[in-house]
Image 1 (cartoon, one colour):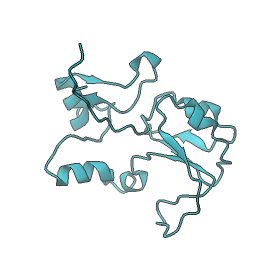
Image 2 (cartoon, one colour):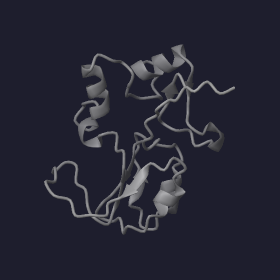
Image 3 (cartoon, rainbow, N blue to C red):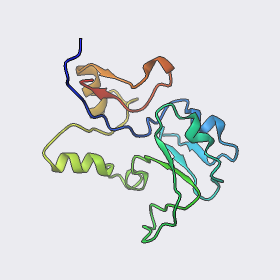
Amino acid sequence: MRTGKTQSLPMMCQHCAEPPCVDVCPTGASFKRADGIVLVDKHICIGCRYCIMACPYKARSFVHSPQTDQKPDVPRGMGTVEGCTMCVHKVDKGEMPACVTACANAGHEAILFGDLNNPESDISKRIASYPSRQIRENLNLDTGVRYLGI
């Protein structure tokens, strides 16, 4: 039954346990870190865009134009592919990704970040307390991103 209700859902890299983007990358530029974060190494990406085609979430994009005012810890480059990095430059310093901080600063607790494999982490406790979903669960990619209330 149609209710007329619409919902907005941020679609970012889902940081899959077995990322299809990594499997198709001919240079190894797409890779998954030990902590589960999926990244693109801008230095070896040749811009073939195979990873964009392989991503069932359409969560990667190609940088078409020159980039100016670069931030040294978050480089972007024309002719390469990019996607959500979970702000790995912050995570590596023990900080939270920018979306988590912005959401908390706005007085919400809608976005959490942490170790899903640690049952004592805040995110694991939240997921154990509330039903969560993975987008396109039928693909069995075991995504690292979970959604509540959808």
